[in-house]
Length: 469
Image (cartoon, rainbow, N blue to C red; front, side):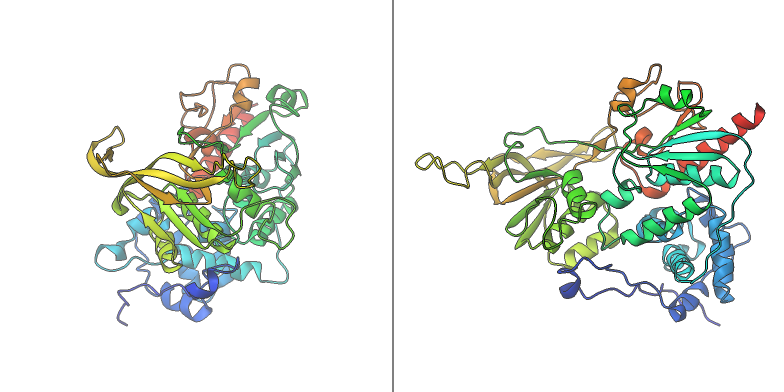
C-alpha cells in the first residue's frame, strides 16, 4: 500500500465560530483518521524520533499499537514515559522535537506524532474504568515544590517507585502553568484535572495554598522528615518593557491577564475578578504566551487585537500552528515594530473624567534587522523618523518571565545565575545537598515537555541517591 506523503489534518472549529468561544479549537482525530495516520509510520529499526522526545517515549511502539487498533496498549506504552500524555499531545512543540527527526519528514511530511499521542490519551480518558497502579511503599519521603509539568512528572515517577510524595502548590488549584497560563481553548482544564487525579490515586498528596519561602521554607521541609526536595516552581515573575506608561490602568503582564482569564475564569458572565472586555488590544511579544493572550483577548470581546513584535515573521518564536490559528481568527501582526511609550488619557479640563489614567494608545517605532545578537538572531534597529501611534485601550506585555526570587532568598546555599535561574548539575542537583530543581525555575520560560524531561531526570537522580542510604 502506498504511503500518504501528507499528514492527516487536525479537525478544528471554524475560525468564525471559535473566535467567540473558549471551547477547544482542535477537536482531535477520529479513530478512522488516527488509523490512517498511524499507517504512515515506517517503524524504523533505530527510530530517530525517540531521541527528539525529552521524555523518550517509545514512539514507534505506541503508534504500532494504534495500527493494530490496540489503543489500550498504545496508552500503556506512553504512560511508561509520560504521566501527562493528553497534555503533551496538545501543547508540546512536536514540530521542533520528535517530528523534526521523523524519517518520513526527510522527503514527505512527518508523521503527526503529537496528534496520535493526543488521540490515544483521549481514548484512555474516555474509558469508564481506568486502573492506576500503586507501588509498595519504600519508606522514603520526598517533597515537590510546584505542581506544574516538572513537579507533576517528578512526583509521578517517584510515586511509581514507592516514594511517599507530597506536592506543595502556592495557588489554590494544582496544575501550575497548565491551569493558569494555557487557555481553555488550547488545553481544557478537565484534562489537567484528570491527570492530577490519576497521580492522587497513585499515592501523591497535594497541599495547595502553600508558598514555599513564606508559608514553609526548604529547611522546614527537611525538618518535617522529607529526605529530598525537588523545586519545580516555574518562572512566574513577569518581565516588562521598562518604558514610560507601564503603570497606566489597562496595562497587564501576560501572566496576570491569563491567570485572571484561565484560573479565575474571568471570561464568565459574572467573574470574581475584573478584566478588560472589548475595545482595542495590543499584545507585545511573539511567543506562544503572546499568541495565547491575543486569542484570549479576542474571545473576551475585543473589537481589534494587534500583536506587536520587533522582529520579522521568520524570527517569531511561537509555534507555526498557533500563528496560523491567530491569522485565521483575524488578529493582526505589527511586525518589525517596537513600543517606546504607552500613552494615557489626560483631560486637564475635566480632572474627574473617568478615562484619565487609562491607556489610550502606544507610541511605536518601525525596526529593521541588523547584525546578529548574542543569541544569533539579527538585532532590531530603529528606523529614524518611523514613529507612529497604535490605538489601544489595553496593552498586554508578553515578553517573557523569570523565576520568582522568593525561594532563593529564603534558602541558604542555593546558587542561582544572573537571570535568577537555579543552578543545577546534569542530574538536577542544586548547590544545596538533597535539593534538586528543574523546569522553568532553572531554565526560565521553556516548553512543557522540556520541564517534564527535567522532572523525570531529577526523579531518577533522587531515587539513585536515596536508595544508596
